[in-house]
Image (cartoon, rainbow, N blue to C red; front, side, top):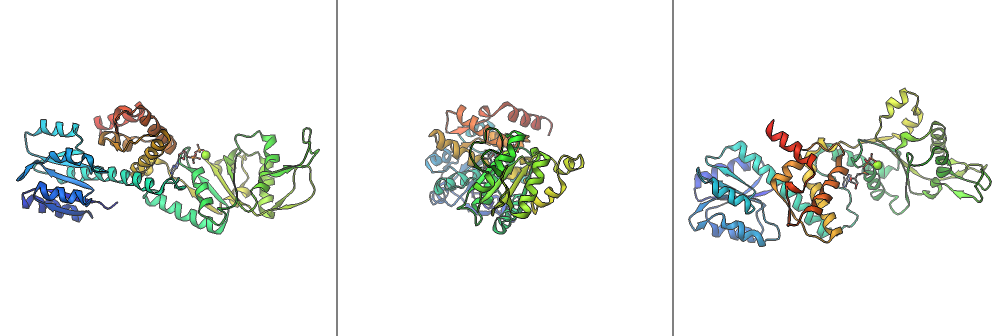
Length: 397
Ligand SMILES: Nc1ncnc2c1ncn2[C@@H]1O[C@H](COP(=O)(O)OP(=O)(O)OP(=O)(O)O)[C@@H](O)[C@H]1O
Ligand SMILES: [Mg+2]
């Protein structure tokens, strides 16, 4: 993400040194020498992040911490402190400073600190962006990792071409929301999206759920019932947890896909439908095929396009944006306005490895919002697992 950094320092050499370094890293930089000029820049909303010297010709730098409190979003402020200013720096952190760096500035630390501030800004942008678009179905956060952009690019193509898609990935990575995304972004968006969880339906019932039945097909079948295949006509049928589908139903599904037609249970007429099939699995279908528990021909028929949603630990750069998204969601659900996450809390969120992926992150933020009385979320509001993991990181880096 690009960000504009305001450097407030009256020493020209220091300013140029930092400015050159950050420009080289791809940031926009504005340099000013006084508090007055810093205020002007901030009022205009020009700066995303502030690097602030403590002693300035026209006043005490940390005053900006109070003054920026009224801004719609207070930019993260990183103080540049002199040797011996530790007490002041600690006070400033309590007062909302993002971080402090001691002179002489170490570039590695500068870069890390800016990187964390950029994450905070990304989260807030997400929060405002969503507020301005007013939950218009923007339920799918793409993020910015190349691996996810690639998945989404392929999802767009699969949507446009109406081909079968097999979505794989660990639990909670967002397979179902990706299926909905394909529906919303393709030519079938005004037609039904029908989801069926193959693991949640008794084996014997799955077939009649999918294909429907005629009156008298079996005991209890008093009148004809349409199957989901028919209900989804023109739209999309999402077969979740496809690995739980019994082998004989798999065979019938394969035929239905190939012939674009099927018979109801107990029926003789072929019913023709136009349905795009999306299937999801968090189990390894290839090893199920080896063990004889999944049909190979169906597997290849389903994975005309094969989308693998990466685990969250492989796309940590997207965590701040997702945090912003879930904050907004919970704010609107609970009528709150929590807009801040402390740098320590964000650090913990980014360092945790999220075995439950985005679902676990979503739950963690929901819980944090619930426990949080302040405008901001802190480490104390996060689940113990998340915090312990990040403490371990600090102890054994
Ligand atoms: N990219 C995303 N943007 C926003 N929310 C997401 C995203 N990915 C997942 N989520 C949220 O995370 C939760 C889990 O997502 P989903 O149910 O799609 O996961 P799944 O891969 O189907 O998991 P499982 O294998 O356990 O069924 C949902 O609440 C979903 O809204
Ligand atoms: Mg799912």
